[in-house]
Amino acid sequence: MIHKTHLLQQILETRTDTKKVFGTSFSIRYKDQIWAGASCNLVPESSYFIASTTKLYTTAVILNLQSKGRLKLGDLILNYLDERIATGLNNYKGIDHSNKITIRDLLAHTSGIPDYFQGKSANGISLERQLTTGTDQAWSFEESIVRSKTIRSPFPVGKPGKAHYSDTNFQLLGEIIRKISGKTLEENYKEVIFEPLQLTKTYVYQDPTDKIPATLFYKNVPLDIPLAMSSFGPDGGIVSTSDELLQFLCHFFNGTFFEQTTLEELKVWNRIFFPMKSGVGIHQFKLPRIFDPVGIIPELIGHSGLSGALAYCSPQHDLYIAGTVNQVAYPETSFKLMTKLIRTVLKK
Image 1 (cartoon, rainbow, N blue to C red):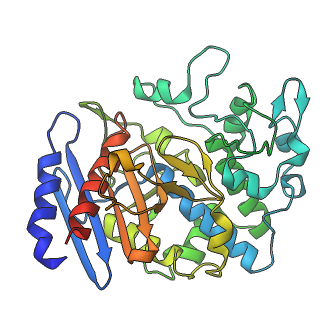
Image 2 (cartoon, rainbow, N blue to C red):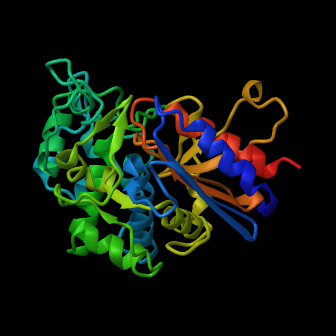
């Protein structure tokens, strides 16, 4: 890969058009080689919001708790949450199915719980829409749950072959982590992930006055939403760098936080957003042959975020990639860039 560094850097610079993408930062590990590059308003050391890629960290903590015998994925969430929170989470056609939801359902998005962030409430406007049109706001865990309960459930819990991506699931997982451990979410991340891996630039964004992370873009306009970013927590609140995100990704899929054999149990795939499928706390990205006729791009597993951040790997190729395009409006952009970088690395 070392002899391709110029090509990889050129790809990043070409992708930065100052119309849709104003900066990129990516790190790749392929076998025993590591490459890092960036373009325009980002440098390899830049800190940025990883958004829903945070869900991998929350999954790591949940699986770590399971490895210690503190919970089981098949446990009902009613065992861990206050009744006022757990009741009414999945109200499908007038019937409350919440008493059947398990921790695994939350991780796999098979709970049928509405998404407090992208779901439209009674006024027909989503929280995402409010934020991207300039209305920054903060919310608490309880407020995210209340909002979720005003949105219609898409299906009863555990309906075969059904998954509905919902940030509410991970808000609930964060609360379960707090209940079991008696510690804050930040303390759990530090104890299980940040400190053991010596990730000094990775943290949960909680202070709206913190200017360290690079400013997001929505289309061609800076998107300054510090109140919202400080509210996402377990579903999208972590700040990191491409290097530290890559380090975490490698450890996640190589048995640092839980037994590596557990990974096979996570690979139960249901469609969410083409061409992605949801597993149990992880996502699969697999291009159909029409978009990859030569078959260079392997099946990738990991997670991504609305900020344009992603972290995916192909363990069988010993290939790991993490980075961002820092753009909220065009979610496909980071995936196109990722596949172009991977194609360059793997092409003989």
